[in-house]
Image (tube, rainbow, N blue to C red; front, side):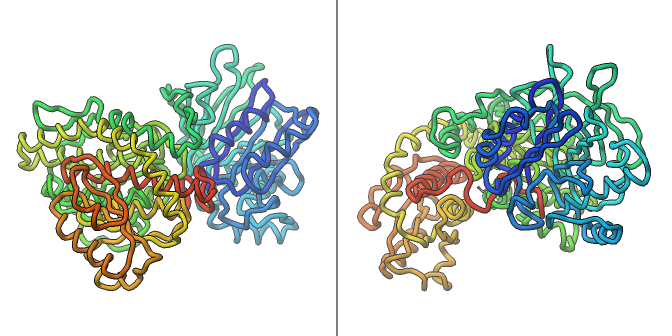
Length: 623
Ligand code: F6R
């Protein structure tokens, strides 16, 4: 999983490529590299570490070394081979005639490598990508074909996932792009600079240059080259060379949405975006007089949705945890038996009976391979597949039969915040939508909708108290272990809270159903093992209070997260975080926010790289 960027046109390519890599760094930041093609010569620069390292390195070069209106670049999240300069992309072929960047995994690279080694090819890196570069070179040499045909033929031999950009010295005004499984978007220059193209793993590096884009589909190869002094784009099928007609999308994302908006980190900005992002998630969808929801994207499948007898909810990480909250909502409001599965497990196990079963796939990025594979499997099983996705036009959004978008705008920090609260909200709204087809009363629907509409204001109220959580972060930053405990809807909240602590603060936090505590985990409790207990005044309140007593009796510290009207807990626990009152089913949306803030502030206190925690990537496009 990596980010790729390409530029071909009249401008100097390198500043466009570096900026593009910065925007794609959420996809991986183990190493970065750039290849420029000028007057038939390649200049390739690569560096282990973040894009800033590469940027510093190439800014020291003189302008001759950096000239070129054609270039490709890459930011890496290591899969084959350790993060190192050597394993960084772009990769040159043996003769140095072909250069390539790649996002994905070539599964049969070892067998191809063996054949190439027998032919005398030498390899400098451990990557699957260098194998592909040499396979293309070998085919080009022996078949005496153009670079696009050589790439196409090479791709008919590989098994796996890829989005690749390829340049050849022999055809210096040509760029080849191909896709199978990993995303790639082509931006078409506008106005005077129509004769230029921008390519990237997603639209964020492109949007400041043009809003006209083409999403390449799986199995397609695109050729950008010069015809009559003008660059043109042609798309063909990798399998049989058939010409495809590109569909040009007009993007609506604004560039300001991509910036930090005055906050020190994207994560904090995105936490504070939540009143607005929740408004955007519900905008135009609440039909109050019917006590129901309108989802334009689902209308075509209303008949199939009415026939659904069971649901499987799938996703990974945060998306699966929000799914756990959705499970309770579907069983409570929609009366549909529901279970939650890791996308990775659903793909590889036997599914007993799929008749009238729907799959709901949750994904912020819309690119998570484990989730995407689960959808493909569900489609084979003839299940109706529905998506809850944030990134418009992403692979998952295009793969599902029908879907709904979060509409929260780009989420840049690696740790999910505004997408996660929007996911919970959409799942509750979906539960109402399904429920109204299955006997949920209009009055009950209206009662929940009324509370949903209040959420943005309640979130604003929580955010006003962010300073109090910052203070708590200073107090608790020294602990290396935490329990985060909840029940029912907030069992999922506890899991999500613990993931935030792990990934941002590098604290071992265990999300646990508090009833389970006494069955074993409680033996961990001592004065150095604090617990955050999610104890709102809901149907589980008394049970949760017992868990607090059990912890206190064993000398454990407790931070209670409770409803603002609750006065009794402050005398029992060590610290209290208050959230406003809302319906039980909506509490996770509010309870997520103090968890996000606590993880954020502890991460800052500990000097971590908040927006790009170690070992992670925003979009996990490998299995
Ligand atoms: C955690 C986080 C990850 C993602 C997971 C799935 O903060 O962001 O756990 O939730 O990798 O990603 P998406 O939602 O893009 O499918």
